[in-house]
Image 1 (cartoon, rainbow, N blue to C red):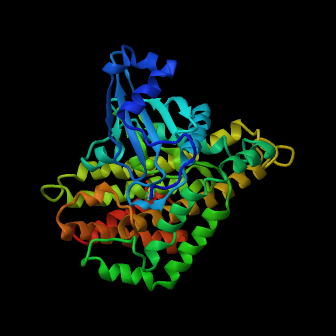
Image 2: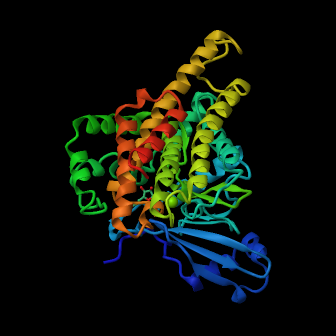
Image 3: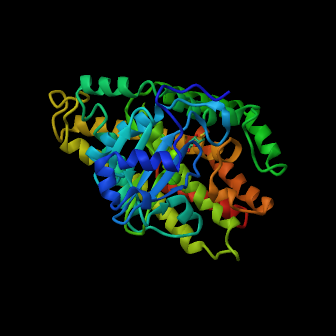
Length: 424
Ligand code: SR1
Ligand code: MG
């Protein structure tokens, strides 16, 4: 029995898409020529959706359609089609604040749960580039603009309370996608669960240790509570290097289908966690020890730059755009010591959140369902497991002892020390 879907919904194929797009003048105009001559390819290799690239004589576009189930798992895991709507809405909001850093949306079809957007070319998924040790000189400057602006301008620091509450209400129903995160990141890797997987038998004892570690289970449960309850700003919701497309000059953040109003540190921490994971993966890819030392140094610099750039820009926005209802200037005048104190406390909490969410993302990519190509592409399981053990060790420390890291340099130093200790 196929899964029930709303009237008017059908899974798109080449012919259906050709007809549909031919009927949307602004899209057909962008492709040019006769629709019969357009080339259409399904290229989706993500966990959830169909993705098509359509090319005509005048240009190309990208189409993303939600399936009524999790593509990675199949029809046994039904999934709300409305995620396409949340992605569309988040994309529109983010484009207001982060122009040039997100793909342009050309059309949304509410019956087909289908988004037509700008084709990013020659951009590639950043994770692919980073797994092959490609550096991106403009990445830090651009991603920190995105992180600071998308979060600041959707927070209570910039928005009046009524607008902020309306935004919370709009994204609140994205419960299916939040539930994926709640389960896959904050719960399953710390218990016995059919969906978990890891490099076995090398990591069997590590997975068991994670399940028996009360301190760790308390830390991840407290973090889950923060994720569930802290409505700070509109989040991307899946902010990792697989959700970023790059050239050496440009950065674009894609795929905000997990968007909801939550703790800012979740996005920042997830990105930093994924960069840390990439740092560790190169021991499994290099042809001779040390071959990728230069690249590792770039990754470390990038991790540091992401935190510093984000934190600096966020506070600058706060100083320059005090348009929200939180921390009113009537009580805390511009430039006053009291405002500085409020900012320092806010950023200290965000830092602590960032560390813990980074830690959580490291464990979920090693012991949970969805792994990262950075590590998955290491063919030799012994070499892969050696990298994964360092990932897990750092993960636990960030989750359980975030207070022992005062600076991002201390985090990267710890990552470097783990490699050095193992003689990597
Ligand atoms: C079943 S979806 C698995 C993961 O893919 C997405 O990229 C999210 O990270 C999600 O947790
Ligand atoms: Mg995605």
